[in-house]
Image 1 (cartoon, rainbow, N blue to C red):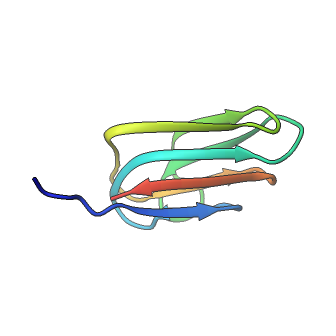
Image 2: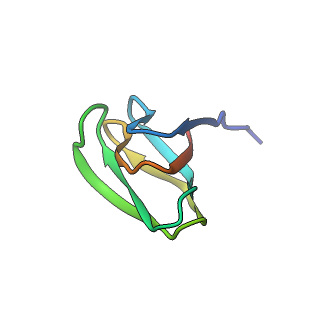
Length: 93
């Protein structure tokens, strides 16, 4: 059995989870405010690029989304829009 290397990135503002092609294994989005917020995940390494998904999170809550065996991004895994008060952690390979 082989073990796949997994890395994580934590963001509190727009930025790259992975700045090149790869697979998103899971994402956790935590909202530290009282109101609902969203993050937009893009297939890009800068700006906003191609929107892949939006994840909305109610106030003072979090969402964990697993993507077995991985959600492939051909350019990069980017949080192009990340509203203030969200903390995003993504695992990739």
